[in-house]
Length: 343
Ligand SMILES: NC(=O)c1ccc[n+]([C@@H]2O[C@H](COP(=O)([O-])OP(=O)(O)OC[C@H]3O[C@@H](n4cnc5c(N)ncnc54)[C@H](O)[C@@H]3O)[C@@H](O)[C@H]2O)c1
Image (cartoon, rainbow, N blue to C red):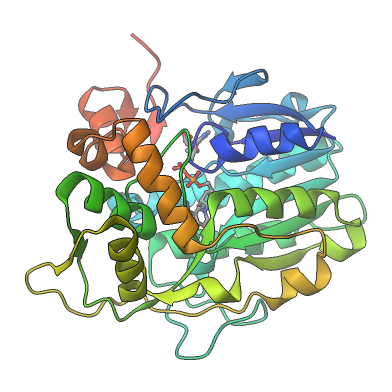
């Protein structure tokens, strides 16, 4: 298939693009370039990379594609909290506008990178796709708003699919330090200890970034009637774990002791997710990673690629810091989360 992947120059995109290419798909990227230069190893190449804001895309830009994979977003809570309105503008209205442009251009498949965070405060039982949305952050809300807007576009000619990804982990050419497994492993490497910011009791669903890529590829190729206007939780039941379990696994693999930050208490985000639907309906999806293997991968790459404390804690790998850095340089309008034209 000929596939447009937006957000291709971020954490997931830098793993997804080569994965799709290896499956024989032709990929074109579209990204505003917030993380250009923030490299952790060699970047994917050999594909057309367009630079632009998804909010400016018109149907003419999307002619000739079989599918759009929509990753571009404000992709975590701390940035979402900065400017909720701008987050809705990119994550909800931007997603719907992309889908409208794709539909007008005759693209039939639209795979949306949603998040389990739209379940929010979900109580004690594992939530399946039919559960009510109860987002507790602007980021989670923006994903719920986007799905509502996209489902309204579904018809005989247009099939949106919602991948509600668990929290990702694992190495990527665009590494992220602000997600839990990566953070705990990177802290073990840079500080020599596994520092927990909470008491470690909350549950988190996790998924390796390459397994997210496998899910996109499997859903892209699945029969249309199976994925039409359908949501899929993306992860593995085995990888819904308490944060202290991750910390213990990191400690075991790296030899660094677990420590608790001063005043560490429970954390409000705490939820468990049911991943049976994707396994049942999409047999081609076969996740290949476990959390301990992911920790080993990050630990090895940290050594081989020379992860420094400065990069790990700064704008290179922490999304909020990067956004604030671009704003300080005058390159990004924070209120709109729009890049300014180069002077
Ligand atoms: N990483 C996770 O744990 C996780 C979990 C669940 C869902 N997701 C979702 O998956 C998607 C990809 O996440 P990621 O971790 O790769 O995020 P990321 O922040 O690493 O990358 C996002 C990319 O989108 C681009 N972008 C942002 N706004 C844009 C705009 N207006 N126009 C064009 N490009 C724009 C950025 O430049 C960046 O390259 C996001 O939609 C995110 O919400 C991520």
